[in-house]
Image (cartoon, rainbow, N blue to C red; front, side, top):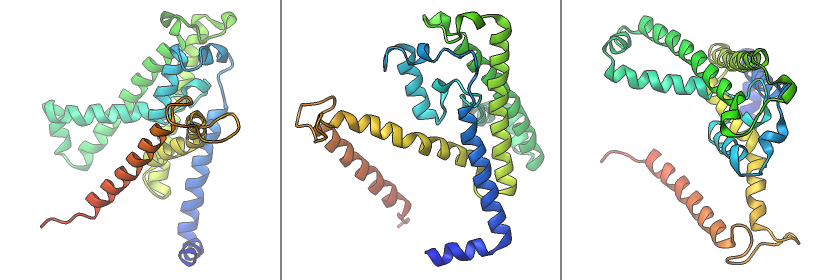
Length: 247
């Protein structure tokens, strides 16, 4: 296996594509460290897993985003995925879009253009309601910045961040290796995996570092066993279906 990897890096074109892909993924992750200056992080994290903080934590686990950081890439790439799904569904029920799908490459480019416009609209709506969450009982913007100009600026910055991620995905598609959008989603999930797994597994540990007994601790050892069994079952099922052959 290692000999094959070495061979891959000996090919100049493949080496360039790999380094370009890794570099763009690094830019993607670094963007999550650039936060909006007027976000009240104490409001986001208040209440632990309750209220708005708990809801946002659940959303970002399933969307590979990082909304609670208040960063410029906080929305992640999911608005683009949402827009793509919407247009795929509309293509089956809306005749003009169905006709575009049948036009081949030119129709696909037109649909991609519409998808980008829809992504911008979705980003603006999501970022606006996220920042203007006073309607949910918690203000995310610091009191001295809680004005319309700052709200509009934050909305535009987060929208621009997602548009930039779309551009990164397209650059990976064209000049890198693999599907750009899929790689961005994978990078987001992998980046949060250690922290999420550590927080969840801590519920199965006692104060002295041992495993809890049945019915003890936050979760109980029986839930850990069930999760392990489900994990193995899902992997077995995926492999079984992938390797299946029509009789």
